[in-house]
Amino acid sequence: MAEITIGKEDFLKFREFFYRKTGIQFDDAKRYFVDRRLAERIEATDSRSFRNYFMLLRFEASGEELQTLTNLMTVNETYFFREEYQFKCLVNSILPEITTQKKDSRPIRIWSMPSSSGEEPYSIAMYLLEYWPGIEKWDVEIISSDIDTKILGQARRGLYSPRSVQHLPKNLLAKYFKAAGDGFQVSEELREAVEFTRVNLMNQADVRAYREFDVIFCRNLLIYFDDLSRRQAADTFYDALHPGGFLCLGHSESMSRISSLYKARKFADSVVYQKPKEAR
Amino acid sequence: MPIVKKAPAASRDQDERELQRDCASLVLQLADGDPTTRRWAAKDLVGCPDVSAALIGRLRQERDPSVREIILTALTQRADAQAVAALVECLRSEDVSLRNEAIEAMKTLPDEVAPIMGGLLGDADPDVRIFAVNVLESLRHELVEQWLKEVIERDPHVNVCATAVDLLGEVGTSYSREALEKLKERFPDEPYIRFAADIALKRICSN
Amino acid sequence: MKRVLIVDDAATVRMYYRLILEEAGYLVVEAVNGVEAMEKSLRESFDLYIVDINMPKQDGYGFLRELRGRDELRQAPALMVSTEAADHDRKRAYAAGANLYLVKPVKPQELLVNCRLLLGEVRP
Ligand SMILES: C[S@@+](CC[C@H](N)C(=O)[O-])C[C@H]1O[C@@H](n2cnc3c(N)ncnc32)[C@H](O)[C@@H]1O
Image (cartoon, rainbow over all chains, first blue to last red; front, side, top):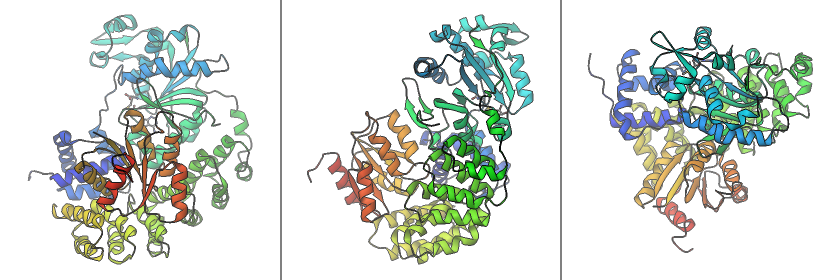
C-alpha cells in the first residue's frame, strides 16, 4: 500500500477544523504527532487519501469518526492526581468560597462524573482529607457515577496498578493504600467515602435525581460527545448545581464549544466555570 | 469521618416535579414565574405531541438564557415542520443571541434544513443570506459545496460571498475552482475576498 | 510587543487579521467566540480586542458587556468589526463597550490604522 502523505495545507485545514470542533489547538511542533494519527485513521477507514478522510470527518452523519479521532488525539488514561491543579483549586479557592457563602450547615456535595475506575473521586477524597482544613468543620458527600457497570465494580474494589498511582506522593500512597498482588488497593476509609452509582449522563431519567451539588467534576467525557449531547450535558449539570456552584472540565475541554450559561472564574490554580449566583 | 456517604438523590423538590407531568400542565408551566419550573417543563415536553407551537411561543418572550437553551434543544429534537419554521423565523430577529442560537440549532438538522436552504440563500435580506451560509458551516449534508459555489457565483453582496468563501477553504474541491477564480474578478477591490479565495484555491490544488 | 486578541468565528478572517497584524509587529491570539475569548482573557492579558458580532455560543455584544463588567479587564480597547452596517448596530456596539466600529470587509490599512489609534500609537 502506498504511503499516505499529509501535505502542509492539509495539516492546516485539519488543524483549523479540529480547533473549531474541539477547542484543541495543535502548533507546528505537533505536526508529526497529528500526521501519524491521521494516517492511521485514513488507513483504518480505507479512505486512501487525506481528502477523502477529511470529507468523512466533515460530513459523516453520525459524527462517529470525529469521535474516534478525538479519542486518538487526546489522553484517555485515568490515574491518581491527574490534572492535579484542579484539585488544588478545589481546596485552595472553590471550597473556601462555597463555605463562606453557604447559609446552612448541610454537607457539601461533590459529583465526580464520569468516575471511570475511581481514580478521580478517590483523588478528590484524599485531597480533601490531606489539604483542606475545612474538612474539620464540614461534612462532604462525594458521589461518583459512570455508565459502565463493569468499571464501577472495579472502582468499588479499588485495585490499581503501580502505573496508576505513580503521581501520588509517597506518603499518601503509604497512608491510603495497601499492597495487593502486583499493585495496590485503596483503603477501606476511602472506599467508604465515595458512593459509586450507575448513570448515563444522556438519560434524563437517570440524572433527574442528581441535584443540589456544590461542585461537579466532568473531565474527559464531553469532548467525545457531539454538539447536541454536550449541550444537554451542560443543561443537566446546570440543574444539578446550586446557584454559584462550580463545574470543572478536563484541560483539553473548553466550555466555549458547549454553552454560555456558565461564568468563567479565574482562581490562582485554574479557570473554572460557575453557575451564576443569581440563577435559580 | 468527615466524608459521609449518602444516596445521590437530594430529594427535596423531587416529588413536586413528579406531580403534574401531563402534557397540558407542562404547557402551562412554560409560563411559570420560576425559571427552574420552566426549564423542567421544556425538558419534559419533548415527549408530548403538538407542542412546538407552545415552545416557540415561549421562546419569543423568554429572557432567561438557560430556559432558552432548553427550548432550542427541545425544538431541535422535535425537528417537525413547525419547529423548523420557527427556527427560520428567529433568523430575522433583532435579538442577536436568539439568532445565533437558531443558527446553531439548524446546523444539526441537515435533512430538515436542506429543502429550505435554496429559499434562504435567495432571501431578499442579505443578513438572512449570511445566516443561511453560517448554517452551512457545520451542516453534514452533501450539497454544502454546491450551495456555497452558487453563492459565490451569484450573490451580489460582498459579505455573503465573504462568508461563503471562508467555508470553501474547508469543504472546497476542484468543483469550485472556477467559481473562486471568478469571484476574485467580481470583487477586484476587496483584498479580503482575494485573500480568502486564494487560500481556498491553494487548498484545492494541494489535493 | 503589544498583544491582540482576535475574536471571530470565521477561520479565514482570523488568518487575514493575523497576517496584517503580525506583519506590523503585534502578537496575535485567536478565539472563535465570546466564551473562548473570555477564557483566554482570564488566562493572559491583551492590549486590544478585535471582535466580530455574530458568533455561536456568545456573540460580540455579550462578550464586550462581560469584559466591561470585569474590573481587571475593562480597560483594554475594543474594535468591533461586523458585516452589519446599520446605524443601530453601531449604537449597540458602543453601548456594549466597543471603542470603534468598522464594517466588513476591511482593508488592511484600515484595520491597522484603527488598531494603532486604539493602542494610542497614532493621534486621530
Ligand atoms: C476517559 S474516562 C474519564 C475518567 C476521568 N473522569 C478522568 O478524567 O480521568 C471516560 C469515562 O466516561 C464513561 N462514559 C461514557 N459515556 C458516558 C455516559 N453517557 N454517561 C456516563 N458515563 C459515560 C466511560 O464509561 C468512561 O469510564
